[in-house]
Length: 616
View 1 (cartoon, helix red, strand yellow):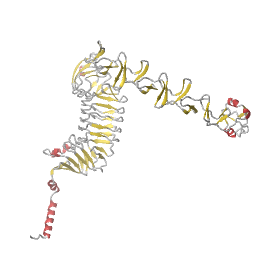
View 2 (view 1 turned 90 degrees about the vertical axis):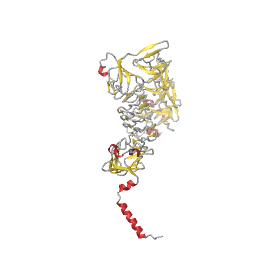
View 3 (view 1 turned 135 degrees about the vertical axis):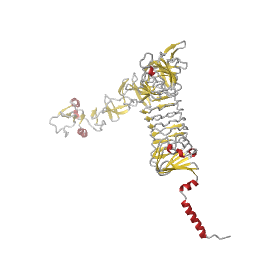
View 4 (view 1 turned 180 degrees about the vertical axis):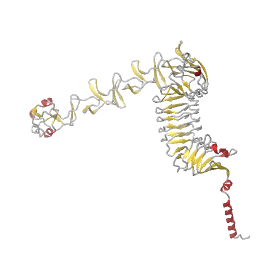
């Protein structure tokens, strides 16, 4: 075997290093598996590796993909499995990766200060991964994108978890657009704003409980949520954007809290402004026929969009202003009042749908051998539902007959008169008083009515007389109103706090002390320990009770003796009398009067001098 010269080997290695140093970096990268590369801008380059990693490097912004997607030829965009943004990039503009349908992760470095909306219009993204050192953004374990403080949820991965709970502390959410796999979402009590397009296209979301603190819902926030069945708007919501519930084809009702000051809904779940002059949205799966309230003067854009079940609509009042696309996708008969000059031919058009106009025929009551029923203006009749007729509410059974008497519906009790109309307010039924709220529901428990408190049993009947509630005693007058303050009952005096509960034990009332026994009865003309209660029940202070003296604090003073002969002294001014003629305070007076205690009291002297009391 020939020996190899060490010097020769070193020379070969040195030559090889020099050759490699002369090869461009791009050539080395290509040799390592580069499929394609290019530029997004003068400052930003990209490289696609054969393992599906798309890497962006440089400084500045990654623009909207429309500016660079054509560089990914022959379907290469579909091969991208992950995107890595290198340190130095400061901005990712909206829709930057919109054609990367198979990308599963996006890695964002610390240098990024701005991220646009809708980075992925559709696809397979499962996670946003944000550097822990980024000062503006963060992500959680589920790959959801937040601001740094986690008060705003900015983007949910399109292929993220089917179930997710937004953590407490988040106040603003957006970025669930086209998350079709999302089926269950829990919102935090801290949430205040649902942003524009937030749930646009979330076709798997069938229900969503909105927290009571929410204040705003953005434009098209629930657009094309085709599985959403029902939604409730809390009392504090003051802003609802345009076309929020457009194309929600399964929606049966939009229910607004009755205490909301800006919005309202009717019994069909139709969304209005508070005074019901503007109709904003009809539920996509609402009733097949509907009568627009006569108060309506405006019907909003796409208010009835694709409400396919709607087949008949009636306008009983003057012609409202109707948006040109209000009935898009609707084929129905539309009725208007004949002789109303506001319903001109120009008003009787399609409004984006197919409307057949005819003169309104008023509904009417009908009676047969079974009972009363109502024929609607469109020839149908109400069944198993409520219906407002001439300003009064009626309920019809499953066969369409008007009901009377007690009715339980939706967990609430209602009362219908012999004429069928729903009762509200006070009602005497079978010798007992009941109160029904403005919606007709029977009230139980505590209720404030016209500034007075009442209590109703679980059966709804009003309580009078004594009632123990949660361990405290209350008294209700014959009219049912709760008593507060002093009350004489069956010859005995009681005192009730401002909350209505009966007082026991010692109680200071208007600067006087009183004592009430365990049954609440005021005690009088007797000793309670070292204290004496006078005939009016008030505790005696600074006076003689027979041979006993009670001090300014009302407590008996042992050893105090009444003066011999019951002679006391006093001056024309002041409120005290003296049992000792040589009391130092008398020496300063030029005029001194004397007599019995009774005479001193008649001169306005109400208490014993403190000095004399201490002298015994």
